[in-house]
Length: 299
Ligand SMILES: C[S@@+](CC[C@H](N)C(=O)[O-])C[C@H]1O[C@@H](n2cnc3c(N)ncnc32)[C@H](O)[C@@H]1O
Image (cartoon, rainbow, N blue to C red):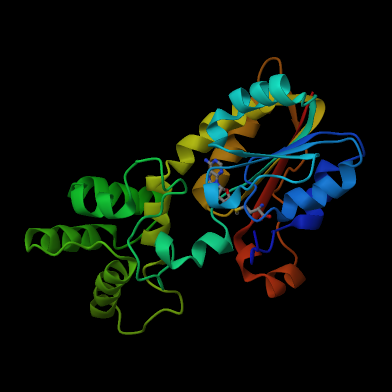
């Protein structure tokens, strides 16, 4: 699939995971395949890389015998690995990557409702055939307290209460906010009334991010996947996690800290401080500005 996604911290990932010929890797967030293909080049001719993505649009039949593509949620990592071991002879795993969040391909797809430019339905599910609730469903059914919790917990939105109140008011007046542009307008109007000086950032950014995290239970998936990744790794193997949101990074940081401090530690922390993008990378790929990479090694 053609992709416009620029992988963040690519060189840093290659340095930290240090893929060698014959080793096997799992990329839990295949996306446009940028990280995966760079790792794959290093593990040829006999190494294998399993690329997982929850979004079926990113996963096609692989024509490369060293690349196995799987459409699934990485929260099922252990079961996915067990089945690849049994059915495809996938050997021990030397490195696992989680590059969290969404790709530029998803952001730019009008139909998905991820971006404030999209006029399509406010969907935001990574797996559009899962039957789970969409962002529009949350906006049209969640109670005021629940909306405030989502906007504050996942988006750190300072005007969460006012925005939630306005959504409920519109709902009571029969207005169904079902597209990203309707929601963006509602939030922009609130910000305009509250602050004369418009900020450079679109004021709906935090609420859209919060809805995406809620729709896909992104924090829940990470919490479930991290211990499975440790189980799946071979001793000496490394787990690298790139996060773009302070809430995500906190989950990763605390999990690594607790595992490393346990009575019988199973991991060693390789990054005391998270690795961030260089100035040059941020200039070339502004999305990398908020990327934080944390790495552990399994003992
Ligand atoms: C930042 S992008 C990855 C980009 C990729 N590293 C690259 O170089 O192109 C994140 C990807 O993770 C996928 N994703 C999000 N949550 C997921 C989950 N729970 N399970 C599997 N994939 C998930 C998204 O569909 C998206 O394609």
